[in-house]
Amino acid sequence: IKAIQWLACEMVALRGHSSVDGKFMSLYKLLAEFDPAAKAYLDHLDQIRSNPTRRKPAVNVLSPRNVRRLLNVMKTKTVESIVNRMKLSGVCSIINDGTQDMSKLEASCLLLRYVEESKSGRRQPVERLVGLFTTGSTSGDTLRDKIIEHLNDINVPTVHIIGQSYDGAGN
Image (cartoon, rainbow, N blue to C red):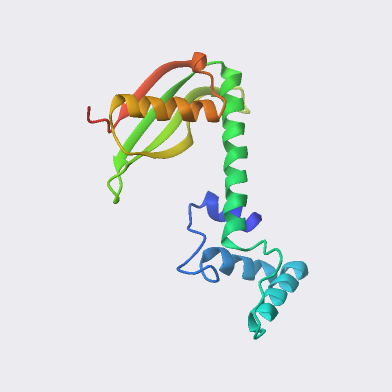
């Protein structure tokens, strides 16, 4: 978990072109040099891979699917924390920005801007990313529907929203 947290915080891709290479597995192997349980687990996976029958383990916590699941849980917990901090201030603004990706879909990000009190008691505005999504259209109706759907998914009532900002909307 610590390896995934560190790579996510550094915004580093976890995998290479296959599930057995990449930054995550390299970092996990490095950490296994200092953690006997991690080392034993890697040895167990290597033993399975070297076996001619190559049966997959019943559960592989390092599999791409399980790593994605863990990343999704981390994302959900992070967004929940952001929303809870926003609710302490009572109000927020939403910021939506988008651009067309290589597949010609509109890739949009959704941020919440709100005032947060620092540990020293100083109040300051903060902007926090709470969502990424794609749309097939940049029409106002489509963007509105996706934004409201996402706000509902993360439990941000629209009554908390006192401002809006949109960039990249061509119409």
